[in-house]
Amino acid sequence: MPIAIKMPALSPTMEEGTLARWLVKVGDKVSSGDVMAEIETDKATMEFEAVDEGTIADIAVPEGTEGVAVGTVIATLAEDGEDVGSVKPAKAEAAPEPAAKEAPQETKPARAEPVEAPAATPAPGPSTDSGRADGVTGSRIIASPLAKRIAEDKGIDLSTVTGSGPNGRIVKADVEGAKPGTAAPAAAAAPAIAPAEAQDFGIPHEVEKLSSMRKTIARRLTESKQQIPHIYLTVDIRLDALLKLRGEINAALEGDGIKVSVNDMLIKALAKALNRVPVCNVQFAGDSLLKFSRADISVAVSIPGGLITPIIVDAGSKSVSQISAEMKDLAARARDGKLQPHEYQGGTASISNMGMYGIKQFEAVINPPQAMIMAIGAGEKRPYVVDDSLQIATVMSATGSFDHRAIDGADGAELMKVFKELCEKPLGLVA
Image (cartoon, rainbow, N blue to C red; front, side, top):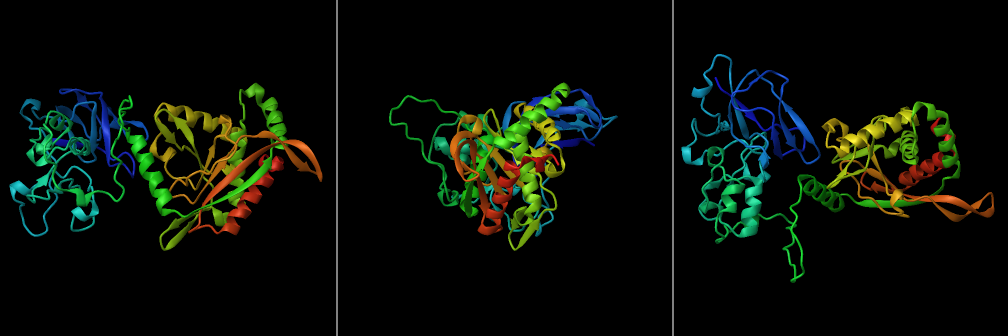
């Protein structure tokens, strides 16, 4: 019996992805564990492995296709002993209808994509119906998210477009060749904050399509600022002792090829501060609060086209040299798009350092569902009171952003105080 190979969910938040490259072709035999394709998610390019054994009988989604919804049939696998030439391409299975044994043919949409709006399905659960009711006819239109966006931009009524994808699904190529017409009256279903209409005012420009990563960043940070009541607390930290200790550590480790950065030491300081002030190592969860027993620090890393936050797990228990080695590896693989989901999803708090750009101070947006992020500014020579006398010292400003639903101002202030003490008396980071 033919086996349907479907677009996998490579992360808990993945709804669609780009089928970047096929590594197999029709007629190729595959075994469990063989890499079949490379799939681009909103954060990384990941390898997709075969689960079953057999022969590739059909490839339904060509490489380079964007906006492929999770659950979409992308290929068909013939089992051992089956004649590849006689195997029909697999189709997505329809979810069972609660009130009828068989759904009418004309109302049987492909069950290969995630629900686009909770109101589109009468009951919760893992339904994968992606069709939306047309406001004029009540019929369902099956289209990829990318095709829908293009149609909306061009004013194309999708009910007038014939789909060439699996199960008659409308894809990008179908709408690109369609003529603009009267768009279906679905304005009432638009999100609360709709994208602003482009107005170039005659200024020379080019249009750059948002990547999956950029769209995810925009969505998550908008949700963060809308839903999380931020409170910001700033301290000035004298860095001279930390810089001196860093120099001594690097001199001692030079033979091992290890070079610890200031950021590595600040990651350790934040983790230890969270361990000492556990009321800040929490997460708001509606009617409950998650209290974490270890500090996993998400570190903001700039990569081409966006930002990603690889995680140093249990950073408080690791040496600064361990943190340094892990960060170098994670950052390099992040820039190559090779991180695994567990390496950037999770974390109990974040740190974002813009000191290398000369930024004196900034307020970072909390990375949901976390409850705090530490924003690090540049260390610079400033007049500073040391032992009751005014001196010139190397000082940086650090600003903590806290979710006020989970962390009170006084508790956030205590964390900032402990973080400052650990940085100014850095032997505590290596003891």
